[in-house]
Amino acid sequence: MQQNEAYVADIPSVSGMSPNITDIGTMFKEWAWTTYLKTPRHKLLSRKLKIEEVDIQLKWDKVRITSLRPEYTEMGTNGNQVHVLYDSKYKNSTDDEQEQTFRAEKETVSTATTKLTKGFSRDINVGIELTLPPDLPQTSKAEASFGHRLYVDNEEENTIENKVKWSVDTKITSRRNLVTVAELAIEETSSKYVFSMDVKLKGTILAVIQDARGQRRHLMTVQGDVATVLRDIKDKDRFGKLFNAQINNSRTVTWPVSGSLHLKYGVSQTVKISSLELSDS
Image 1 (cartoon, rainbow, N blue to C red):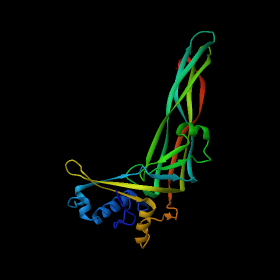
Image 2 (image 1 turned 90 degrees about the vertical axis):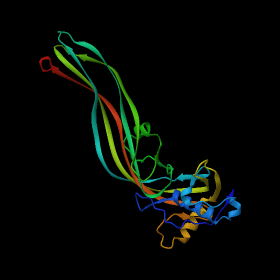
Image 3 (image 1 turned 60 degrees about the vertical axis):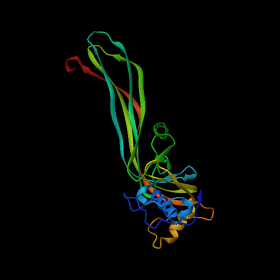
Image 4 (image 1 turned 180 degrees about the vertical axis):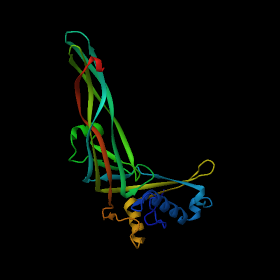
């Protein structure tokens, strides 16, 4: 296995969606390719291939990504909205009151939409975790819908949907010569936030280089310390255009990230009872 500590990608790697998001996946692939080109030919046992003839796969198993606690700013709320999920009508054309059983079971969909506006991306899930905002209405309902953590995939809007079941089993009185209407209604809340936080990266990145032709022969595996590789790239980035992450002596990268979060979820259920004249039904 080839050990490398100081090769650097020469091409600025910025995500296509936003100039504030650095594509570290592309950076590490360029670093691996540069390492391959700098390796003496006799160690490769074959002619060096062209970039279009190879496939470079990154292995993130030995890289630990830790999300610190986010800071949230609420950007607005659509308030609470009530939706009727189910209704049932009971016609009582007798002169006596009747007792009816109202049973219903329905599902709603809670959504959490995340978007990264500043930070880093890679060729798989970016690995950023968010705790829920502390000032959410009905926090226990939000946790029931989304759990304690949310995951930010990338700089594109990504919506997570979770189904929540609501049910009712109650007795109602159907009054004489009336139509009694029972409704199962759900109250939903919707809030929008922006967040900022630090994300730490530490560990070893592996790049497997294969011949993309034919049998995909293994050419070389390159490994390097994440902080060392990124420090080398940052040192050669004279104008600071690629990223502003901090790299300390313990080989930990601290990367500031920010983005947006939009939550919509149900907070309560209500059974509404009303009556109509028989002729109005």
